[in-house]
Image (tube, rainbow, N blue to C red):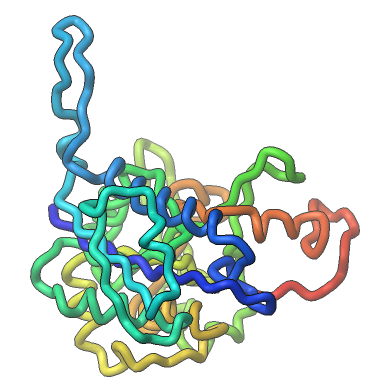
Amino acid sequence: MRILFTIAHFFEPNPTGKYASQGKTSLPRLQALSQSITALHQLFGQTQCNIDIGQRLALPANQPQAHELEIVVCTTGKSHLLHQLPLPSSFYKHHSTQAEPMLLGFECQAVLRDYLGQYDYYCFLEDDLILHDPWLFIKLGWLTQRTGDQNLLQPNRYEVSTDALTHKAYIDGDLAPHVTAPFQNVHEQPELKGKIMETPITFRRTLNPHAGCYFLNANQMRHWANQTHFLDRDTSFIGPLESAATLGIMKTFRVYKTLPEQAGFLEIQHFGTKYLNLIGKKVSWEGHSCCTAPVEAY
């Protein structure tokens, strides 16, 4: 299988910025991007092996899940860290643009469109997302084969910590219904049910389709690219960054996520602890009182 990944990468310090790409120091962003790209090669690349100790021989491993990858990192101007990235140049291609930083997700969409017909999956990630699931595409294929390409399963983003109130937090809980109502009807086929390894699983139309990423098969990508709203650069969902990542797929597909009880079925790590650290401060923890200041959606 051939897989195209596009990554929107931007860094430029801004004391009033609210995103990690505008932080004071570049080190966290470098770590995030490096881990993101490295994980793709380790999970889905073809150079995986098993050491046969008796023969002192390295033999191929995970070959059914080993694919041909192309990773394209989209940047704008000089506001990026690729010259500092501690990775072999063969790990990715650089696609330079002059786009507004918060609109880089749209540039990634253009790259995906330009490669229509050449790949089996077309993917987008923000540069602080790290996959850990080698069965990601097996799970996605399982769902679309059974329910159709009009249904898109999004992963649940999470953060982890060793010194916070909770060690793991899923950060994309439901938004108020009116936030996404102009773009989707969650009452249309509200649930899909199945069974995996004798375990029942439920997928629910989500009030928060945002995950900072998406993974589309070739049919889904072709269908999206044929829509009149494709690359319309509409920024009316939350803000420009969130719209570039999510609004197009929300307008095009029925978007599902697993229930919180099964959040780990399809998940992706968000680098850092920005949202997790809100728990016990701006976000209540199991009914305990905490700071009552409003929490921004993103």
